[in-house]
Amino acid sequence: MKLTSKIRFILTITLLSTTKFVISAKERPNIILIMTDDQGWFDAGFNGNKMIQTPNLDALAQQGVIFDRFYSASSVCSPTRASVMTGRNPNRMGIPSANTGHLKLEEITIAELLRKEGYATGHFGKWHLGTLTKKVKDANRGGKEKHFEHFTIPSMHGYDEFFCTESKVPTYDPMIYPTTFKEGESKKYGWTAVAKGERSEAYNTFYWVDNEQKASNDLSGDDTKLIVDQVIPFIHQSVSNKKPFFTTVWPHTPHLPVVTSEYYKNKYAHLSNKEQLYYGCITALDEQVGRLWQELKELGLAENTMIWFCSDNGPENGTPGSAGKFRARKRSLYEGGLRTPAFVVWKKELAGNQRLDFPAYTSDYMPTILNILNIEYPDNRPVDGMDIMPLIQHSSMQREKPMGFQFNNRISWVTHQYKLISEDAGKTFELYDLINDEKEQNNIIQNNSELAQHMKEDLLEWKKSVSHSLNGNDY
Image (cartoon, rainbow, N blue to C red):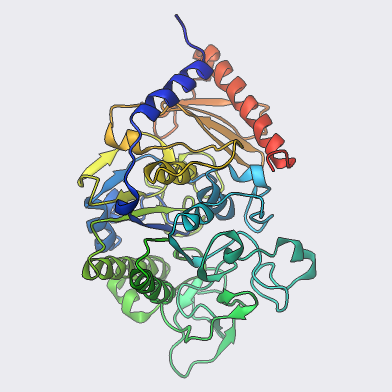
């Protein structure tokens, strides 16, 4: 009997539910979701890059499971961040692009659900899910009356504490930029860190720690270090309070402007200044990931802390960032715009030295973590992600729940093997076999019209569901 895609999906969910991985409340892990900003798939040593120095990320990834085929839920950052928080496609909640919309109070977030279960919750780094102030001009939208409706801070979404910016900041000395730029450097791309005695200007961004409360600590130096400086005390306090912790750690690196000190530039002295700035800030980030891991080991938390690592989309255009062998970059729904470097480490439960090639994406975080913790999702609204722990534990299994993507006029529908993609809002389509053609070089739609038609029907049905959510019908 030939099964329809809907029946196959139902049977798959039944199968996965019988193999659901669940742990007791006493064994609940600490959870850290690290997400970098615009880091390309090839911008890490564990994906084969021999130029960039990421020894800590490489070592940590080897202790866990590396995903060869992990996707961001969008090809720009704000939507992807919304997917992490909710497990849902960002278009359902009106966040189709960067600096648009905000995380609505009606959305159910992973931080809210884990806090109800006794977790300490903290957010550190970039927010980009709404504005953080109505009182002063800040970043892209903050403090501007026309954007007041988008005011939403992490404590409104389940976080006990936070230390974050609205959007981008320089990756070193995040509050300033130089009065004059050296040759080849610019306010848009980046610069060598301002030296002592050199003049600088305010970048007009702030770190926020509470409602209309700016951070008052010294904000000079590497930006990722400043973030980890706040994460570590949060972890210590959680241990002191005998609580497991959940934290989203979202560094700004390597989003433009990339700013690097001479120390990290010198690690790439044989390269161009543009490469020194870009690679240097990633190596600085890498050191802070290593520092965080070392702290967990010293506290005796490394075995039962689950760390998920990914980027929010592919590499920015005009940078040395690389999607490697994959097609296109940030803002594209081809593989290079969506595939990101990614791994999960949980030494207590997951064997290391694994590489898996089934498709997964950031919308899977929430359902996977909730199922591990045996937490029931408290609503029947659509959730786009799925529990991927059975796939991690049984690598021979295939993903049966497709992944839908939308950005501007681009849409795509990705199954375990195939991708249907349109660059013109559904007027024309291309079809790729991602298992046998991961570079997306051979459009096979003409010889697979029946398959393409079935995928198109599923995609359009999913789009209707997304529009239904966007109109507020889930709340």
